Image (tube, rainbow, N blue to C red; front, side, top):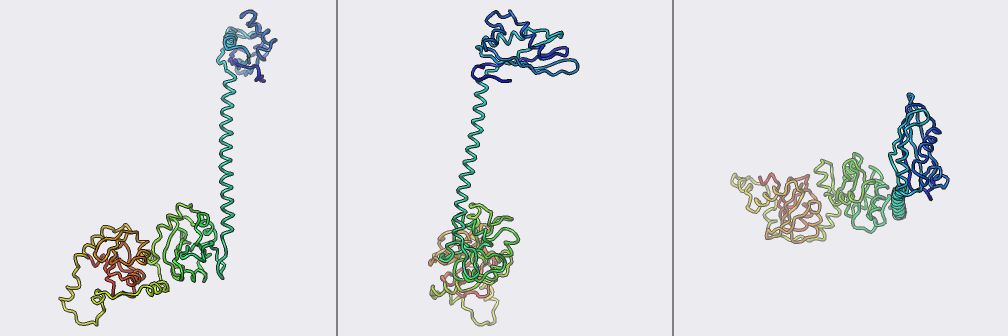
Length: 420
């Protein structure tokens, strides 16, 4: 049905049922015939059509089991009152052709309201489409620019041509990842002191860098990441370990997870002890640290000096097991922080300086000169003892003693077992 949008105001919809088989022409004839003279000259249907105040009567019929049903529609440009009068007149028709029939004027639509609703709905669809396209295009532009910058920033470093960020040569700390895609993902979020090993065969370029820089191994959270990490721990001078969440890869994790993983890094010795990984720490950086920190002779060193073995009396053995009140307090503190991965630092007056995460312990010890004792929720490693000795720290209290070959005589070592 064609409706002139310039003239049509309302649309009459009526439903017809007839007890017999009828045609469209029968319905149209019945409407004109049975409404003629019913509503007066002003609303005579033929005159209204001639003056184009009503449109063409449309009928859609379906016949089934000897009966007919259908829909009648009539567009009008009459006012609201005249239109509903005309619709009511349809209901006065009780016969179509030879058949008894019933017509119900079920609905009078305001075409302008319906059209307005369609305009609004379509406008909403178009607006959503424009907004979505804008977001996609904006994101695409940002991604394209970011990727272009990443590609420009990534380079091949050293004789092994390792994929690396632009700050790898001048930075004091480096992050070691597996492959080129990992480097690109970190560059995306502004982390530029990164270099890739390219597999389990660790390049000499990376090994050399780890001897001079504070090195963090940042690997995938899967089996492959574990294998690369084991190789790094056994061949390079790794200081810290960071891992992507379980089953996730560094190349695909978002910024939030990258920053969280790097923030939660732990000392390499601690990681090796926790997972029973063979770990041989290179000593170049530690020796350099010790050379820069001349040791002061403390009275406690005389107490802890190794003396020739002599026959130890029962009295001496009993004396060795005596725990001081201060050490008892350390034991209580160790129990309090158990499971928290925290460390508590004390000055020479046994006053608490601060409480820090275990992952920051080695850095804090290197930077401080007023620490007297340390109580921490972790394993006492060789590197930690070397740093403690170089910084004149008197006591280290931890959960247990790791694979320590050389115990400094100046540092009192206590474990949870020792403190009962």
